[in-house]
Length: 188
Image (cartoon, rainbow, N blue to C red; front, side, top):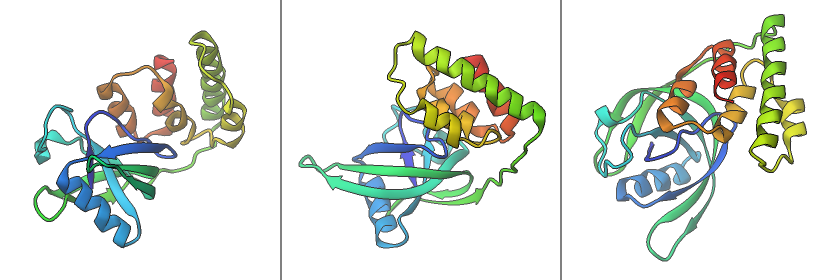
């Protein structure tokens, strides 16, 4: 398990992490020695150096460590690809490394016409949002074509939205694809 200080990681997101805490480095090395899978969860307060269970949100993501780079200052830069939501059930925050027991969150795919229409609306509003904030829009067509309208779209755009940690975490904890799309629409 990797407790993250200031980022909420969504399924289908690839993110670089800088890892410096000894127990986090040990957890990363343990994952690398096995199947490269690791659970990533945000801390409620990013200023907490040694998190306790009460400092961790209950929902995070399981994914794979794609690559690492060891830096001269002792930290590790890791590239992580999140795959799915998981709920934190039990945690060990002591030597030799951070470890968690998690329950995967099963998401049903729903092609309800109302959700399909909502996802189209979210896509259109998100394109408008990108133009307004003058962000680089390359790849938006890929996003529109490849996204499953029921459960991927909100996760794919969430990292790009201007929301604080608490709101992003609330979006991650929302297991209904329709509710995630509705929340995304509110924050676009």
